[in-house]
Amino acid sequence: MKRTINFMGVRNVAFALTLVLTLIAIGSLAIKGLNFGLDFTGGTLIELRYEKAADLGSIRTQLERSGFKDAVVQSFGATTDVLVRMPGDDAQLGQKVAAALQQASNDNPASVTRVEFVGPQVGEELRDQGGLGMLLALGGVLLYVGFRFQWKFALGAILSLVHDVIVTLGVLSFFQVTFDLTVLAAVLAIIGYSLNDTIVVFDRVRENFRVLRKASLIDNINISTTQTLLRTLATSISTLLAITALLVFGGDNLFGFSVALFIGVLAGTYSSIYIANVVLIWLNLNSEDLIPPAAKELDDRP
Image (cartoon, rainbow, N blue to C red; front, side):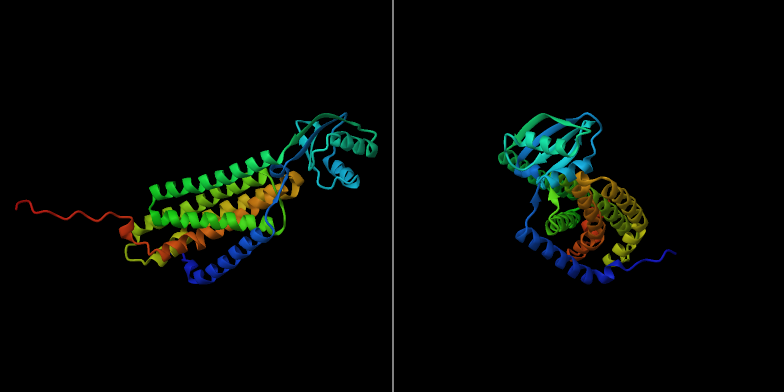
């Protein structure tokens, strides 16, 4: 018989760790805040076209040496097209950037094809819409889990997801990783990933209420989590390997996205065991919450 791991035996230690990490994350968000990128704060977009394939790493180095330390450089369309995003609304900024790059690399000259300014009002609107999207996603999760399972499961799932988002944002805030639209997309992806893990465990807990009628809730959760452990580890490890590849080879443009996903996957795997399940214990989930009471037998005749 397969050995059952006593996950819930250390739930109090896990809760203390969760509380500490969450408080640190909230403290970092309150003191340092998020390091919003140009997508949210506004700035100048400069599109450059090179005669030959552009070397993004060399371009970043050249801009830093010329005093443009906050420039974000990424490919745009063909290998000869480069998009540079910088803070500020100087009308001559595009020509200054092109001149700095041409001085450092005469063998592959660049020409400016487009210069646009994104104002802070647009960035603020993007930030508000992103936050609204996150809240709507959490609300949708609450309705879905409440409808498919029961409100106690829904509350456990929501607290688990909130924990994942707060911890991820806290790490980004603590290390001042640039928060742009790609990182926001990663945070929304974390919500879906963490929910998937939680649903798998919840589904097994619900099924085992019918199979293990004499088992306590804690025993049920331990057995259910053990039964789904291999699936959880296989999914998490394969996902982390893919994210690690992005982190190593994705470059600066995908660094924040990769870091957010990496932290989110770790937090999601942890929370599906030690937050979502523990909430079920706090709420004293029992078979009566899932199985409707049997109808009373009526005599054939009065």
